[in-house]
Image (cartoon, rainbow, N blue to C red; front, side, top):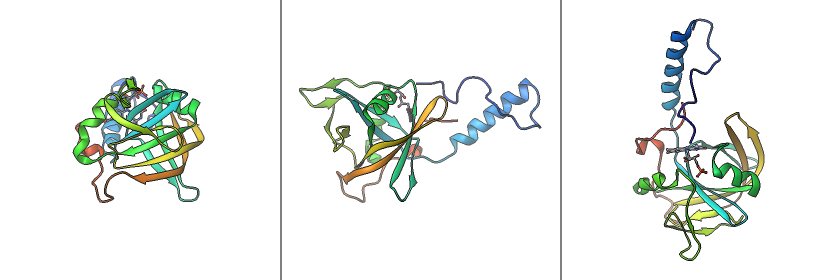
Length: 186
Ligand SMILES: Cc1cc2nc3c(=O)[nH]c(=O)nc-3n(C[C@H](O)[C@H](O)[C@H](O)COP(=O)(O)O)c2cc1C
């Protein structure tokens, strides 16, 4: 995983911010502000060939009504990046608030046990596009990549929702970033 908030003070700096010290202070303030942005917290399924992965991700949002587009920001160094780029699809799984411990299990490439049908010990099934859906998810969106947007250290994969479903009652409360003590961004 990349260094939180990037490495060193990152420009641009407003004209009032002059000198190394002021730039470092501004960099820290901007990071604290970015950390206050509210986010959901999800598990993203990806697959290319027989390689499958599940990854914790908070940079996800709907970006269009018509067509139904969802965007996810994925680090270029992540296995998920390779699998989404090669496989051309991803699933976005929502998680029950009670299951918050799950997100810690998907912060590096998973162990696949084909006999048990598990990824890091969690049962899954292949969704409509072949990418994994976590059995424990509250709901899932299956998306086909339409536009990969190069954003520097990350790619924002814009995908169209081609199928979706609830796996638990629709009123199950879903996990948000604020339910954990973790942060990603800044
Ligand atoms: C709370 C939390 C949120 C995260 N959000 C993102 C995210 O939005 N995008 C991303 O690329 N990585 C995110 N990560 C990092 C990934 O989960 C993961 O550590 C890394 O990208 C490697 O994933 P891989 O298994 O695909 O190699 C987050 C990690 C944590 C703990």
